[in-house]
Length: 355
Image (cartoon, rainbow, N blue to C red; front, side, top):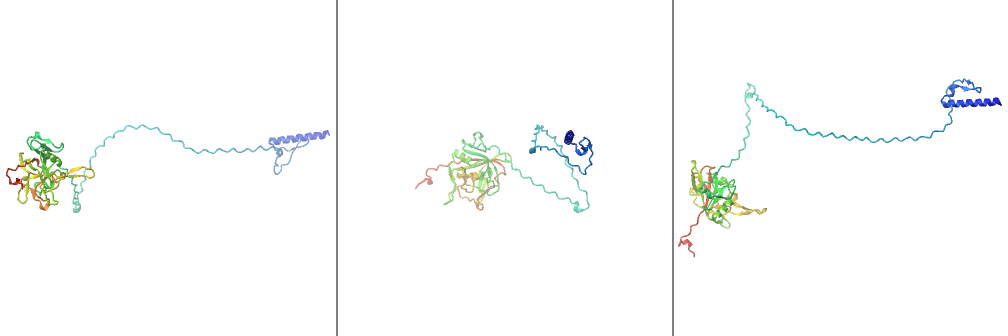
């Protein structure tokens, strides 16, 4: 019984050693087996290493995989604002030196007549004509200048109430042409007048009223011809000749009657023109401003007109410029308008007898 007990103890010890070696990771095949007497028994090497018995070990609980965090989206870094550099002061560049034009290269002489012929130069464009400067008309050629009062602050037109006259300055515009008027306003009808004056017609109209002239009526043709009427107005012209001496003439002397070949004999009357009203603005306009100032052909818009029938048709014009009496074009002239006093009829005049 003691031998059996010792054998059993030895066997248990060997078993424990074996388990201990297995647990330490040493395979039992490398060490051989232990006999009950405690001696190591060499074992032959097997063809294949047997699997070492694994102790009963409780399996470790499965560890859930840790979810990897989702990668954050790449955020582009905000661009760093560069410091604003203060503008450098402007430095004016040095003026470039003037470049002298290269001298023209003369063509080499050649015997070919066609090549030897110089090309015709292109015609240079004609310069546009400069506008003619307004002539210096000078002061009015009348006496008693101190008595003249301006009717227009910007135009050369005056009134002399003491002498009963309206004075204006102009220039000769035609010396040989058929006439529709003796005098027109500047920049209107210079092609068919002898004198052009730089004034407004309604200003002269007002001046004539101020010296006592009476407005009559313009010419009418409907239903029948009615001649122009109004106070008779004397027109006088003053100018300087080549020697600088002042000359004087009646306006009629510068107008030639084609029927008699003599200066015009008829007077001018204060017809007074008329007014037209702009429907859009309501402003009234004096009709003689179109140029019908002192006429020799009948116009319903004339300020001064003839008290006889005088056609305005070009083929039937009655008057032309009296070239022999008129100074050269551009000559400054002074026009003087005065009212002709009406003569009172004598007693016993048969024209005053009434029926």
